[in-house]
Image 1 (cartoon, helix red, strand yellow):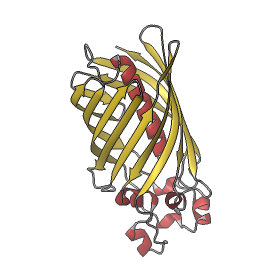
Image 2 (tube, rainbow, N blue to C red):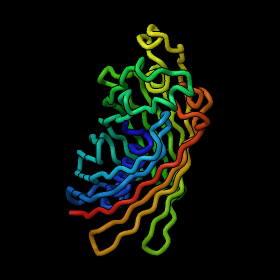
Image 3 (cartoon, rainbow, N blue to C red):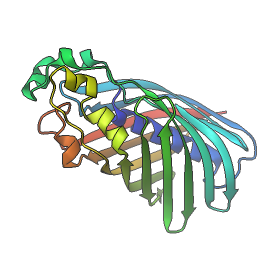
Image 4 (cartoon, helix red, strand yellow):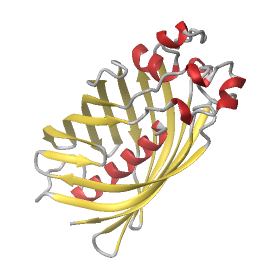
Length: 264
């Protein structure tokens, strides 16, 4: 399985590196900039039996006048004016899980026979993302929908952060929420019709809103190098925590990321 919290940590990290190398969000780069590095994400999976996972990731970013790439997502700047940006985005959704990656014993404790499950596929999302940065902090909003027919759902998100400069280190506490559509939540947290036909419980959580809180850290060093790190906590609403696919008594998950990158 590729937990979504790991994905969130990596996307946050690569986006932070890109912003640091871009010279400030909302301001066009003087020249296309590349960032190459490596990092590792750590997260407790929400799914029954997955446990803690440590995953290394390459950090690849590109910031051009019009196009950009940040890890496993990219897009095009539609508008950049002052502190405001509007982007068209294309991103991978790596929330998929093979049924064999679940713990058989842990699923059984939730009343689920692992052999009756289907795999949950990864997907790709197309969307729009807007951002505003000023003296009061930074706000990011976005909406993206599945274009691969995996879940056929969509996700809308809102995030606010307030950067604090401490010497050369920038620390950004942030809070946010993500709204998962009914189809998206049902696919990754519910049981599928074919599974119900085999005898599994019919569980469909419906649309759900997930709250999170986190902190990002960026510190440049040795001219073109940047250290980045973040830690976040996601609170699952009851309808997701009660899913028979989720680890018993799990209502929140912590994830973290550390890495280094060099700008070119």
